[in-house]
Image (cartoon, rainbow, N blue to C red; front, side):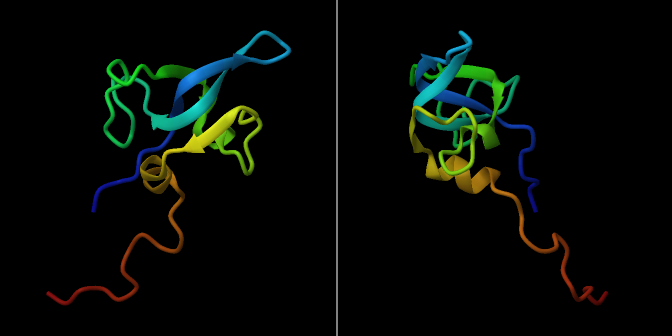
Length: 98
């Protein structure tokens, strides 16, 4: 079973500047793993004109709970599914027989 990505950052369709002068994500946001040139859902960053935000954690860009989500209008559902925490155990509760 593939492992879920961890430590995701944010890529977004636009930006805004907070009162402290820090650039923040706005518009549509996607999950992004540093060192890659695409979002978690597979969209190439350059072709989609998405800006990278290596200083913003994925959790902080969620409109429901994030502290950097003031201007976020849409969260990619595919990225959200891929990056959501797992519930329950990762292993089977009953071991397989040989």
